[in-house]
Structure formats: C-alpha cells, structure tokens
Image (cartoon, rainbow, N blue to C red; front, top):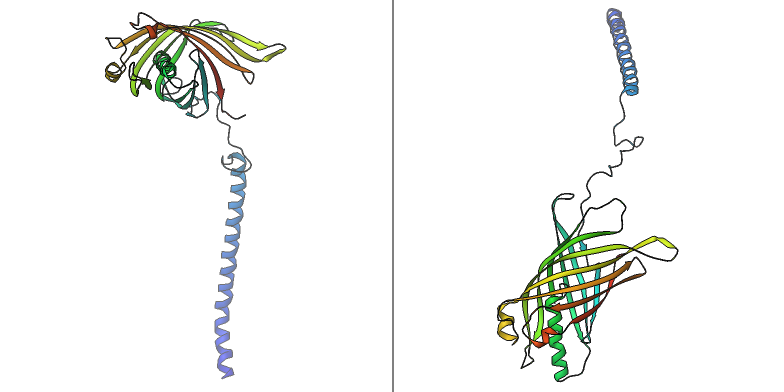
Length: 293
C-alpha cells in the first residue's frame, strides 16, 4: 500500500509545484494591485477636498445678508391706561405676526386683549363713569376686550443713522367693546370698526452721561374715524343717528430701554351729537415688556 502512495506522490508532485507557482504569481499580482490602488488614492486625496461634513472641514457660516424671517411675537408686551374718569384699563398683546414675504410686502397683524377696572362707588356716578369708559373705548384704537388691527409707519426722507424724522402712520382694525345703556345702565357688548391716520415726529432721548442707551421722544397727531354697529345704535341710547364718529388725538411719549416707557394722549370727538361725547378725554399709558434679556 505504501508503494502505491509513493508512486502517486511522484506523479502529482510536478502538478502541485506548478499550482503553487501559479498561486504565488496570483498573490504577487494581487499585492501589486492593492499597492497601486493605495498609491492612486493617496495621490487623489491631495487634490480632492474633504467633504463638507468632515470633522476637519467646517461648513461655512450662513451669510448675514440673507433675509431673516420675522417671527411671531406672543404675549411679550402690553400697557396700562389711566384716564380722567378714574378708569384703569390693562391690555396685553396676545400676538403680533407678519403675513407676506420678508423684505418685500408684509402685512403686520396685532391682537390685543384688555380688561377694565372700575375705581368708583356704585350708583349714578358709577353708571356715568361706565359710559365714559365706553366713550374712550370707541376712539382709543388700542382699547377693547378683543382688538385685531394692522398698522404701519412710513418715514419721510429717511437718512442713515438719523434719529430725528417725520413719518406718516395709519391703523385699521376692529374691536369688541363693553358699554352701558344711557337710561337703564345695563351693560352690553358690541363690535366697532375703526381707522386712523396722522403724522409722527420723533427724535432721540437719553439719560445724562448714558448716550449709549439711546431712546426716543415722539409727538403724534391723528384723525380718527369710528364705525359703530347696529347693536350700539339700538341699545346705547346715544347718537349718532349715522353709523360714524369722528375725532382727533394728540399724543406724546418717551421710550428709553430699561428706564422709562410712558405715553399721554388727548382725545376729542368732532360734532358727536351728545353731551357725554363732547367731554375731552385724557389718557396716561405705561407700557411694559415681558421680553427676556
């Protein structure tokens, strides 16, 4: 048996040697191919930049020249009104947002909600002052239990870095007001559409030795037009027989960041047709902000 194995090994040995030589050549060729591939990759890596998401290369920062979309402002500001009738009104801006395209056409929309505090005793005096609150609520564009409006300011001949200037302003909206009937003194609510336009003058204002915290002083004159609803005409007991009130206002204020934000207004109806609407209305307003930082 051993003799046959020796003979088989003698005849197969040349075949094994040739197979081993072929495998050596194949292995050598494979090693050469791997070396060539590594060499090509190292050469191409020096000429080809790394991908942007590579930890070595940082992505370029976004350009500051791109238009920034204005974000909605929610519950970030409001004001407290005091008027000569003894009434106090607190209002907060529910939200302010913009509709349109940034840096092009934009329509600002603001929604305010307010409550009134009746600082007086009960009786006829209370009823009279409740009516006075309604009188102010009609002509004051920022009053109302619910108030939706759009407003804007257009600067005349705006100069770079100039604080002083003259602007045209407008505001259009609708609000819900709570009033009292003239004779029964029963409370009721109604909607009123309004519009106003005018001129705004503004210039700088600051504390002594604190010019870096520059604020603003402004003076505003507006003409008001108020449209009352059928509910008001049916329940109030007051004129006008027509559906419109007209009037004007003069306002002034100083706004300095973290120091002062106060406004005062004088309102007057034009030919209202009722004695209670002929009384001039004075209003003092304190603005506040709930923005952080």
